[in-house]
Amino acid sequence: MIIVGDTAVKLRIPSNDIQHLVGHIERCEVLSNDGENADVLVYWGLEEMQRLTKLYGEAPSPMEREYSWPGLYKPFDHQKTTASYLALRDRAFCFNEAGTGKTSSVVWAADYLMNMGLVKRVLVICPLSIMYSAWQADIFKTAMHRSAAVAYGSSDKREKIIKEEYEFVIINYDGVSTVQEAIKAQKFDLIVVDEANAYKNPSTKRWKTLVKVLNPSTRLWMLTGTPASQSPVDAYGLAKLISPDRVPKFLMAWRDKVTYQISRFRWIPKPSAVQSVFNALQPAIRFKKSECLDLPALVYQTREIPLTPQVSKYYRQLKEQMLIKAAGEDISAVNAAAMISKLLQISGGAIYTDKHDTVEFDVSPRLNALMEVLEETSNKVIVFVPFTHTINLVSSHLTKGGISNEIINGSVSAKERGVIINRFQTSESPRVLVIQPQAASHGVTLTAADTVVFWSPVVSVETYLQCIARIDRVGQVNSMTVVHLQGAEVERKIYAMLQGKVNMHERLVDLYKQELGI
Image 1: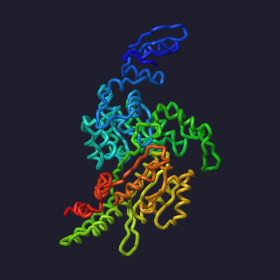
Image 2: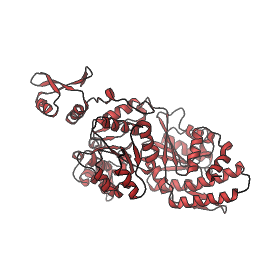
Image 3: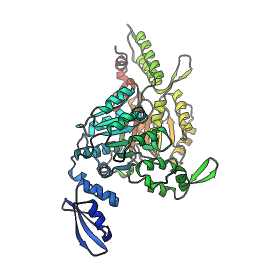
């Protein structure tokens, strides 16, 4: 296809297709016809290109010609391409890797369709941890002229948000079922599902609920950086939502198509499985971080983690004890550091008591958020966990989830660390290193990973920067992502100080007083 004069697209089609094309697109003209092939000119408008895409699978989007790309930041080339691709398709996948800015690409595409009068309201379904920090924040930065709200809390609160005239409504996966009827009644024009692997199993309540809120005219864009990463069978649930004609009617038939059964409970992928999955998960666009040459070397993400009732209770109790202890006394940096450390320990899931016992708390939302991060990247990951007693909690959860991992902390000898690091750098397993920052924040090369996750913030700028430097060094071939997990206010403030490179030791007393409100 060739763009002619910035107003039309010229394409060559079989002569037998002329009547079919003219029947679908009014604004077109046959330039020549030799009886076998014909040259046709089609007006370069959005509606025409959308219909041309349905007929032939692709067409140049007029979005890049006529869209102003609003927002605080200039879009990267791959973001423009992604947005243009989605705008032409009612249902499509975006498989861009984590850290490539696909959230903004989706917002721009939706905003463009709103400008064209084709979309009025968008429902974004995503993990709890990124409702505010990723989606609401990115909508504000990318399309600040659009209204957005998060539907979270009680059913009544969610319904109120959904029924109001917000152009973007953001809701977590399991929140959809609680307000299913309200969503159906509003008839959202576009539904976006982020980290779509959550919908790979068609037998789940989550999957069935999504089907119920969709209607034939609803646009649906599904996003994930790692489609069918664990098994080719996982592609079935996703394909049934976007392109059901590309997979068999029943899951068992799909499983037989892509796997061999070698025992009663074990199947392995067939050699043809990769191509079968590729064919099923279409239409799709994918950019790897290594292909996005205009990306910054380092991208930061924040995942907001709600504290469980149990953690909130003990966090509040500790603050009350701290407030009593601080009354009428001068607060030293040493005391402030110790108390802040205890708040961070509770937020992170385990605390070391004065009697040298370890008490663990329910931090399932944080563990779920970590697994979401791992699902979004196909490369290796480093998880920095500041407190020794929390490291085993994290490692055990990864192991239960089938994620190969190893631990580096103060009890691991220098020789053993070397063996673990070499294995991480040169072998497929382990996929994840769970590291105590002080044990491997200097001089160690871990460039097999391109993602660093901070389970909780460290309280030293130097340690924070050195942790990131484990992947950001000679030998790294990918763009890198740093993920902050946060739930308590003290964590938010410390991460802000770390990114601002503020000397924490000078500010601990102030931070302590802010947290207590004194």
